[in-house]
Image 1 (cartoon, helix red, strand yellow):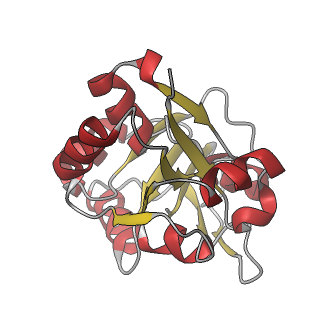
Image 2 (cartoon, rainbow, N blue to C red):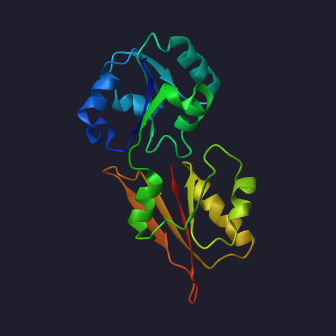
Length: 201
């Protein structure tokens, strides 16, 4: 039985995917993804669905179209890591999907910072309220945090300083994996042994 393909895409777009995954995207009857993902797949002729704050509508479309149509959903990096893959697999059943992850921007951020991340506390405030999601992180030695465009990283820094936690390093990564990638670093205070990593999704 045909399955729904959920494909993670990095900043390098389709060029970073295996040829068979590119073919799946180009042959899809129904192609869903964020605006950036769909622009990367502009040559694909299938009917498009832009993912915004409409995940309920996406699930309804996938339920209606599958398995009669070839359905492909594009996500950022690893679709199971704070991504759309978790919702689709959890709702429609993991046996109904095949997930193909790319390198997560979380993984890239730690790599650019030169930090091992197996013991990090990982979270997101992308599309979520800052306080309830950042408060449990206070005092953790190593944090990886998805933020969003604009003032979001600075808001996190202000939140930490509000609690006088000024002994963190801060790394902010932008457009990781793309040609215009940028990583900024604000060193910690002397005798500090704690680091704080945050970057834009």
